[in-house]
Amino acid sequence: MVYRLNKYLRTSLMLTVLLPSLLVAAENAPPQRADGLHIDPVGQGPFYYDTAEDMDIRVRVVARGLNHPWSMTWLPDGSALVTEKNSGTIRRIINDELQDDPVQGAPQGAVVSQYKGLLDIVVHPDFANEPYVYMSYNKSLPGGNEAIAVARGSWNGSSIVGTEDIFVGQEGTTNGVRLLFGPDDMLYVGVYVTTDNPEPNFHTDIQKGKILRLSPDGSIPDDNPFVGREGYLPEIYSYGHRTPTGITMHQETGEIWATEMGPNGGDELNRIQRGGNYGWPLVSLGRSYGGAWQSERFQMEGTLNPVAFWVPGVSVTGLTFYTSDEIPQWQGDLFIAAMQKGQIPGTGQLVRIKFNADGDEIRQESLLGDLRQRFRDVKQGPDGRLYVLTDEDDGLLLRIEPAGK
Image 1 (cartoon, rainbow, N blue to C red):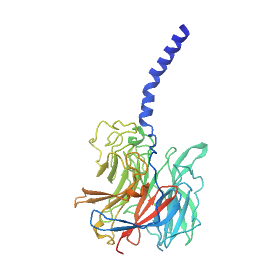
Image 2 (image 1 turned 90 degrees about the vertical axis):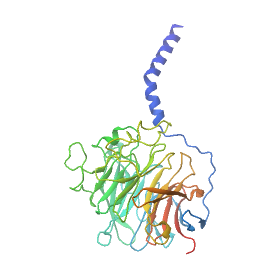
Image 3 (image 1 turned 135 degrees about the vertical axis):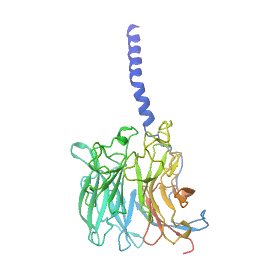
Image 4 (image 1 turned 60 degrees about the vertical axis):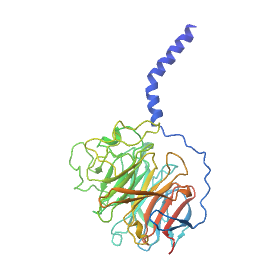
């Protein structure tokens, strides 16, 4: 009886000590997947849609069989390069034909798994004179640790050669990394956070939860906002982000815009300002994975508010402004790839946002939801059409074009 009582007291004491940390862990832990929906493979198409701006569109399947594609870019000859996250390779598409042989294997030391691998891809803004292809990936470090990395290689007309790292992040930086050449021809790098702890975001001596600004060779520009400022890494351009899942440039204004994924809601669309503080997680419009509000407040002095936000979240990722006259009703609109709504698989969509002259959201439309895919990236191609990637085992490259052409 005494033994049982002592055992009970010891167990109670352990629970008293451990319960708060267990509750925090449960609150921040990713949710269990809701896999009750049956999702059929996407057919051959083409698919036709009415749209809110009175313009019928046609969606064609350009390529299928991609292994969780993550990003795409185009070469001057009109061919496209697509990264495959899970295989760690770069594939080429010529005249709507996916080539069998990759143009680049995984960079040396790349970590390739379900959640990590080869990520974003961009080309040098002066490609004619500097034929470099840039790629971000997850890299293995000595001692079993990992970090993000940005590599570049030279395009020789048929493949990428001489690939070398130009930037390796701090130990512990991992998962997604977005790349953008801005209006100043500098390379902007969005670094994810993989925890809801406030420490990684507001501490300005670490790279997590930041957008970095680098020179094309990977060095730190002298005119970065925090160069020479004590307590700040000189490569930081903006901070207080959770996961900058997409980054693009407004062609008319030169502004940098970025999407940011919250844990369970609170996804954001932000205009990125030099030295800006975006507040996460002390300021959030979303909920944690366990369901409680992520933050006690939605706004805070000294932080910048989002242009748009989503509750429940739609898992925003890649984004692009549409500038072509192929679909004139969409000129100036922003398109965002979104993977799932409210933590339910098979609910991905392409989001279209129309703005007024002041850059305020006035309309929002959901497209392609019936395909029930995880939409990972969206870009405008050199032909003026929109191209969309689906992050699936049988990943697709889709093209959106006017129905009548």
